Length: 415
Image (cartoon, rainbow, N blue to C red; front, side, top):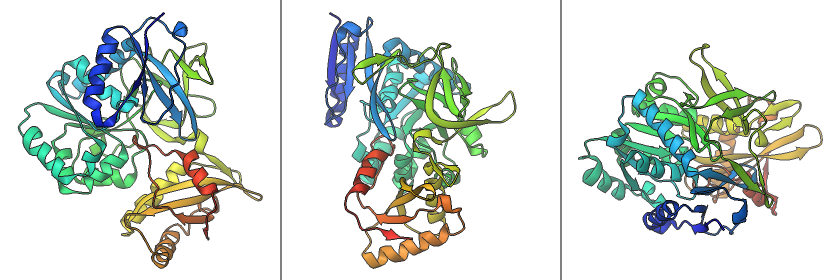
């Protein structure tokens, strides 16, 4: 019977958890990485190939949890491809310090740790609360970053980048980084503008659990020169679009299978292509094609014959709010059935400080005024203040969760 370990990742003891994970992998085990509060979903060990490897949870923004099987060799290939990309950008991976504020049970937190081990580089875990603590940020800078002679690398989701940009200590940390990979969801125009203003070396990237993290990355040079999107493919990666416009990926490091509905299923078609849930397009000339993500296909709605992506609208509204001094922290567009249009959006909003009913009504009127000239299919038909509203640990919106919240008995401010 092949060894298979159900491994609970405790964020308060992440260093110890990472050490135990390393020992289990060294023994040739398959390890299921599980977040606190999640249920065990062990795969029968008889179905597993020879280890070592990890089983990592993956799920689209509309729900539907799946578990990807990634052999350790695939994670090594991912780390090697990232190292090659760094060398092209004149950075020596072995002489780097990797800062990691993302959870071990998610591929976005697993891979920075894995890269540091593969490169034999330095690595520091940062607890989630750390990103909101100016004193802790200052201490890290003064005691570690200021005197470190190599390059500093960090992986962030847009929410974390926004938090760091909101205080001087966070900006100080970001300026010390040679590469700031930003993934998990699209980078808003407003965040990109602020990062360029601070001359930060951002590298927007694209990847997934299925691809063992990054498969494209935009160089900081391109970012600072005004190129948008999430860059060009890393080594060993091919990209194309399906007939429906979904991004397809072919790479030797795709997950070997996915556990869903109590069975293993293949990810790829007969030619080895995996079809993502993301709508995308390419731009640039034939020899320098860049990738841009439009939005999640499973989140798009058809409203009055138009296909509309909520992520794009949320980003536009956040940028407009920032430009006009409205302290909007989060906004989420959720679909509702409509007899005439097919579907329309309802908006959940959270301001940076809690509003009274009168203050919210005033702020809401200002938000509506900003989008009065948007096409009807793009304008929400109702709005609601939701002070609990926030993305998950890795910056993704759990739209099914917030749709359930919306389905409860709520009083809406109708447009």
